[in-house]
Image 1: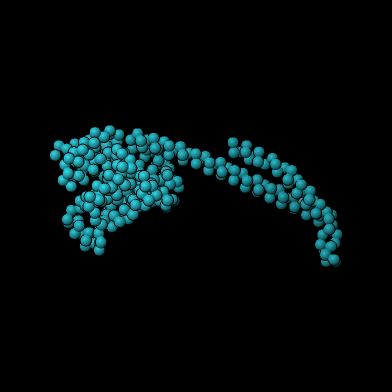
Image 2: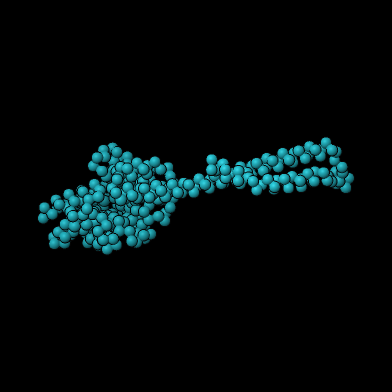
Length: 314
């Protein structure tokens, strides 16, 4: 209704315009016309009347088409503004739910917008899909479907905006998750691509502690790789990915410096990495922090449990 009223308002200024044009056309129709002699000859009254009606009919059609076009632009613009407002509203709700640890509600909110072209919505949907897949209550088949869905959303987010740090980050995370379903060769082959996206994310947002942590996880994973997997990797790739626990530790500390106490899992991996390096004093410090970290999500609870088990084993 609002759009229709706006169209009517838009139409009013053009009442005078077409009338003026009509008068000019009528004067032209009654004036000289071109014929064989000197290119000017008189046209009969019937011909002039036909010409006048044809021109008026064309004018009405042209004016109507113009108004329809302008109305379409107005309504489209209004819809775009409304859509933009709606996207911002959904993102605000999504961030609130994410901060509250409402994983399932967050996913249900965002999956309604899975066909969106908005990068900010898409990477959040990828994150929500991935987080839902991580829940212990999610079945094995659902985990797989969610993992592949998350990768698709992250890929689309990246295609829409390659300068978005979060899109690079979540594409790397989701690509890593999918590797769990595709075997060791694919997982190792994807490792190079994953690290590149994490590095690009940090380049775009150097203060992002989460992405710095993820490179630490990448380093820890390949430092911990069992000998038989190293052998397979060496067979499949001329230069397989490698790292050390010292390198992983450096990234975990960099993440903590960027945003202290930002993530329970970073505290846990600081403790685990110090254990790998046989520094029990520092391992005790960081594992204790991980155990005492407030549990807002199921992942936090899992971190608390693992930290406690490691502390008891010490």
